[in-house]
Length: 397
Image 1 (cartoon, one colour):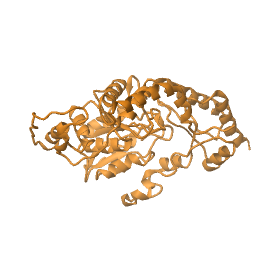
Image 2 (cartoon, rainbow, N blue to C red):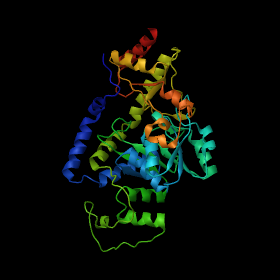
Image 3 (tube, rainbow, N blue to C red):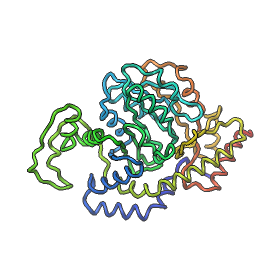
Image 4 (cartoon, one colour):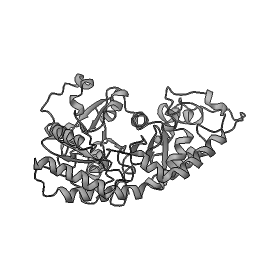
């Protein structure tokens, strides 16, 4: 038997009829950038998360960069974050000219250790950027308390955590802003790149909209007023339509071109209706894995904090034979992944920060131990049992 780490074709079969109809309708409309397909999806996503605003973008990475910029974070500032995540988290901080300050993680949840944040706060700190790694929420209420005490922003990296929650509060509604990715492998994935910023802050929403589209038009003028205190009265005698906005040629900020296209919006709008059901299936799979491995002493299964609702973007367990485990599973036709092999503070791109091995021991330990098993919703029970038998066979030998 062969079991891929992820098989997107199976999910496509479930939504194929609806998606193909919607995409064809959009293609016939002649509206490929912006329009009601995008604004309708933004509204629907904001309602799902429970926030006032959702601003769509062309990637989760751009969401991180623009959220940081919208909160005025830049040269000389410090942003506290985790070293156990995808590179884009810290890359975005560096891209706006700020310095990532890495805090070690919890061994059981892999999330940033909130008890170690305060000792890293200096007078240059402007924000805390927790990552809800593998779809499990970080300790947001403790993080928010620290941020309030030190007058810091909180930006959630929710790129792997769409649909997760703490109690009744959806992840994406707990910070000053939150960032999501719609990369195809995510729990809510498009047929290409895509991203979103959510916020309850009126000014942040305006600035994000301006930054995603060249700092122009009405949002650009409003954003300049918010950021620089310079009022600009746009002429009101120009006319246009959804396809052509004459104000787009009036620019007020140096910004980006980061728009979610209409075709992706239509796909994501449909898939959002399935998200909770897909996430529930992931939870069932994670529970099956946990139960299956509870008596395997060499395996440390991921723990879930009380009151937290994870969405299991990945199922990552720890073992002391990571590389050998991956090779053995591959020999049995079982896909696995090694997220993440290098903690961010030891990435070559961050040599200039001066971190040395041993500085963040828990993150360094976890990168040497985590193995991710298939957990996509369409896995069959037969496949799950085959995966579990493969893992157990490795240790029986």
